[in-house]
Image (cartoon, rainbow, N blue to C red):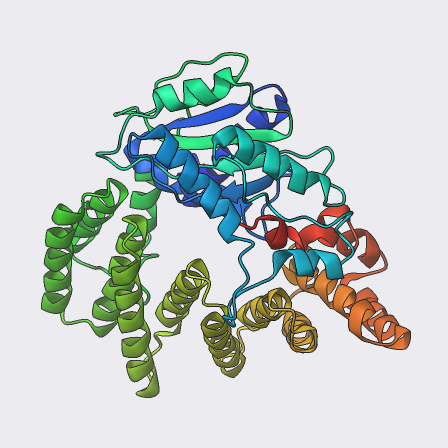
Length: 452
């Protein structure tokens, strides 16, 4: 028998499609033409490429401006989005991108965006290229500018893309967008400048397999068939972003969960609903149900019930939402809770992940001592994992950041102590794992992706 289709398999397919596109250096616009049920996994791939764990060499930027039919207004909005990243703020969440790169020796020369030119797409590309020329080691990389998925009732963007392509998008700039196969908003065909990606994925089958394995609900066995069927209906509505129908189907799912009178099912259903609203891009409702899953899990965990897997998933989703809203200090609190609870439960991987993410966030906030201390805690947690897991996981990212921060803030003998410990934890070839080019750049990746 063949292996059942999984979400992970489908994600790797998406990566393979992009590898093929990435190998073609001539195009200026890539259009993912995707079926409704596959939209989310492609969108998540692009989001990941704007994050520290993005694996491709190009630098991905993400714009939020919505096209409403007015080319001039749209381009002005894009340019203002670019300028806003350089606006000085007193907010604790504000990160001075240029100061970070300057401190890390990445700036070849100072850069300030030109605020006195017409806010057109052509001027935006030129300003981004001017910024690119000021940053070390980006000469051979592209800036991939990702535009948001058009709304179901959004305006057709075909003519706008034709216009910007006719003006010859310069070398070093690439545009990327996602479009509905069933209702195209970017009706272009493949050409020397346009690369069409039409992925053949099986996300509906993959989701159904996960549901059938019970992986969406912790500790529930033999759930009623109509409950599982209702989960499929809810996830289908969320994938299609049909919010009116989704609300109705979610209420049915919650009613069935209560009817079953199984506490892990009831609590786990809040996690499912949170994910559904996440896919439907309703951040407020996603957070509300994640909070419910967290608080109810904690209440029953205090009574001795094992709802840790549900709690952990809800906490990770809540932290991701905080990161999306750039609420880094609130996210730090959440990840610290995750690490502390994982410590109480002997969950080495999430001890490592919790503290590693805290370390990254403190690093982004330029609080290097806090970043260093929490990254060391991540390594200590990861030391309880099997050696092969350490050699193939985010333990390597934590190790790389620890060395970088040690060299930046500590004495040479302290760095030597860390290197000796890494040799013990990873083996004699530890340097070839930790000090690779990709790892060396992992701690600056997010700073390059200033629109993430």
